[in-house]
Image (cartoon, one colour):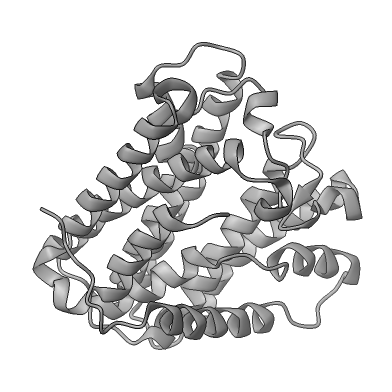
Amino acid sequence: MAVAVSTEFDFAAYLESARGQVELALEAALGPERPESLREAMRYSLLGGGKRLRPILCLAACELAGGEVALALPTAVALEMIHTMSLIHDDLPAMDNDDLRRGRPTNHKVYGEAQAILAGDALLTRAFEMVALRSPGVPAERLLQVVGELSLSAGAPGLVGGQVVDLESEGKDVDLDTLEYIHLHKTGALLQACVLTGAMIAGASEPLLQGLRTYSRGIGLAFQIIDDILDLTASSEVLGKTAGKDLTADKTTYPKLLGLEESRQRAEALVAEAKAALQPWQANAQPLLALADYITSRDR
């Protein structure tokens, strides 16, 4: 059953406000530290723009669960740090070998491969510092839950495992189950962590956490389907990264398996399922419902 988003909710204003909060928090997270060369490489990618969907999902989930958004900001920053690490490492020659990210040269093109690897490592470890040491006012047992969720999403059970299977699958015939495994781990695991950790900070009930798991699985797969479609249909200038990379690397994608139209339909169906999972909390879920719609309507 489809869940409609209220026309009274001003999503554009919400997105602008939330993004502003996140940008300020990201800026404050990397203070005057040494070595300066490492700090510069970290800042280059962390503050290099982006939609900030992951931290915003965390804040929205915290709000839905009745928590104070300010308490979730350090975790939201941590999530963007982990995401940025994954982008820096994905772009390396040994991985996806890309020269362009968010409309600028990739980190290793500016600072060299060694510094890029270390900048990614530093962001990953700083993420756990943000949660464990820079989250005043959040009960310790909730922070422990958050650390556990971040560990699972960032490691072998999550984005690292998904990346390995993705690399191993290049140039091979991959079925839909394997493709969804890759994306539920490489992309979906961190998106799920964004939603769940925000709710955990607020002390969400188990029924709400279950609803959010279903929601995040749906938006995670839909996000990747749209990424696959845009890789074929959008220009590098619009995307801010090299278009057509999946085709060049002979990767299996949703359009390759299903075709463009069926891929779009699948993304829309997944978003509808995601929104339906939040129906019991619909009155307070407007940001998350609108974010789900935004995933399928975006052009980059």
